[in-house]
Image (cartoon, rainbow, N blue to C red; front, side, top):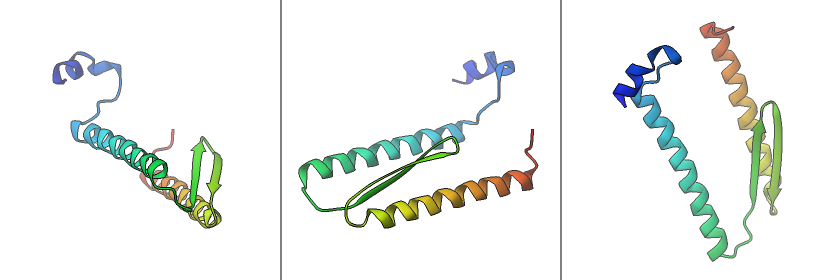
Length: 98
């Protein structure tokens, strides 16, 4: 992998191996979590609630099911708005405007 990075140094931004490792680990944990929830919902019939907020660009897609889905969706939207606000604040403080 080191040789590949050296050959293509001038083609883009160099990514450190620790950042790439954390990125892969995060994706793997999300994938495993989705699989665990899928298996649990198939084998254990329960009356649980679920809520999902997916952002595609600035547009949120909100889904929910169950008696407590309203609260789950509300918490998800609040966390999403706070994370966008934190991103904008950190972007302004670090001066990463283009």
